[in-house]
View (cartoon, rainbow over the protein chains, first blue to last red):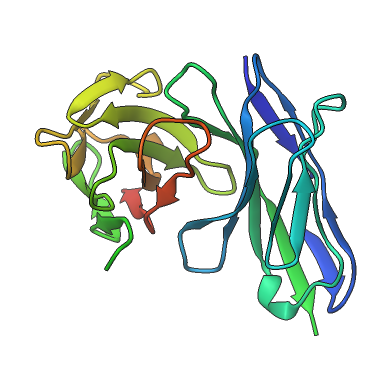
Length: 113
Length: 115
């Protein structure tokens, strides 16, 4: 079945460091891929998305590229800020199944000043 | 507000009690989803509505869980005879229509604790 595996945390970085959170998936067909972020005390927010192979999603300095050949959608940011501290979830939407989302377990990122 | 609204924000119930969780989606959104998020885990799909029709309930863990959306807007998730393993955050999401490219917009969730 469909599944998402993402890098286990927690991840602790200093401000301005480079961030990578790995995400790989298993899916039938061609799913859309998403990164959602959950800030402390808040709900899930869409960070970025990509709907087909080689698409790059980007938002707020974060980027992820849909790699069909490696079934990956790694999240990157060149210079993290303290305000980026949150839990990050990789997710895919199921083709032909009402597009429900399958999520990874989440990666807690803490950025220290 | 323009976002997905869920109530209550927190719910504490004794084992065996029934609970009802409410979701008010974004106006005009056709698709509505319920997810369950256990502590330290990602959300897991429970059920899906397109307007008032419940098209997928494959994720409901038992027949104690029931969801409805009678007029195609507000939805209620009901859990009967609650058990401790039902303790989790219940998330509601809505999207404009059920296509993979449309993002789902999430509410802040209801944190359910069963004593």
